[in-house]
Image (cartoon, rainbow, N blue to C red; front, side):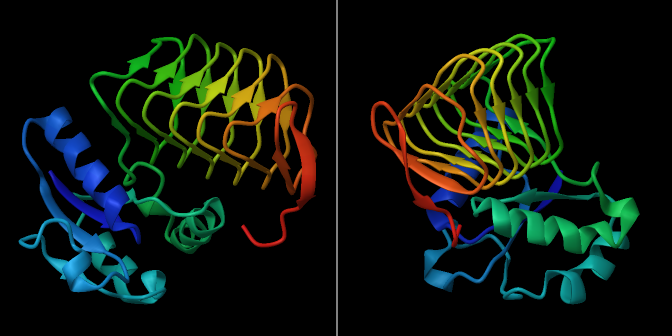
Length: 223
């Protein structure tokens, strides 16, 4: 398998490399497409490219001509993931099947659940019955998604998060380490849930919430 990773965080890239080793039994043919310094490359022998933010102009034509090469988004904000995706939407035959799903063998993923394209599921995560995980969602190690919960695209679920049943998490959200989202809670798009927060009621779009019980700290005007 040939894989190009669009990613900026070399720690997250190292996590993806280990995940692929566990999943495939070896590290596939990988190129990293990222504006990282060369010495930040966790595997020095992996071919390295630095297109800055010129994904569409520099690389889309090449990928159209190389159908065997899959694409994978590295760790980045939901806003950045969506920006890259929108650039690729101009070339319809590249998406969504060209974006790879990765799920670690130790993760539990119910057969009745749905995983979108470009989704990454780290070790020991749980995706319960009839959960719907849409495109480009990253569920990190040990996180739990309850049954009949929907997580919209371009959202990051950090380690140790518990999302109970029947919840709805909007696009471009960030759920911080160890946070808990109670049953049937709805979190609006572009909201950030702070680490360790206990969310007992709905969160409007574009808010930052912290604490136990969670309260609105301020508007999210940057993420």
